Image 1 (cartoon, rainbow, N blue to C red):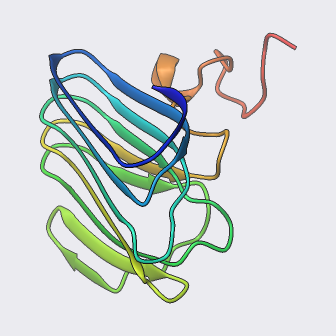
Image 2: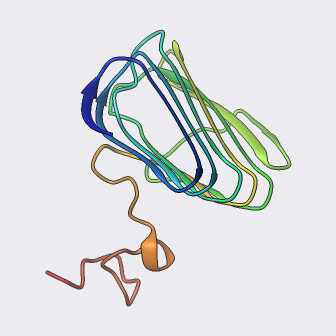
Amino acid sequence: ITDSKGDISAETTNGDVELRGIDADNMQATTINGDVTYDGTIKDGGHYSFSTNNGDVDVSIPAGANVAVTASTFNGDFDACFPVNITSSHKHRFTFTIGTGSAKLEMESFGGDLKLCRPGEVGKRHNGGHEHDKDKDNDNDNQ
């Protein structure tokens, strides 16, 4: 789904859920075997839930967002492209707040990684997390 406004619930069994340019107060996206990518708004008072059993979850957090985050993965890693202050960590579950925390964000994957980035940076983990950076030196080899 691209460039959409309004609350969205997206679900699939075998495949990716990719949401870009989304303006929503409430968002839910789930898949069994695939990645979930969300690049859109995080509005005060909103609720955003993203999950997959066997894939990665990438979510953009706009600068100035106010969101309480719960991230859980059993067999994966959590990473953020910007500093976060994890307030609670229990094995594979992390919680933290950005700003006032008025919005709620839940992201989970049993067998994949979780990643938070800024808008326009999500979903760039192909080839070991470096879609256009085959030598992994944090640049775009195609430019």
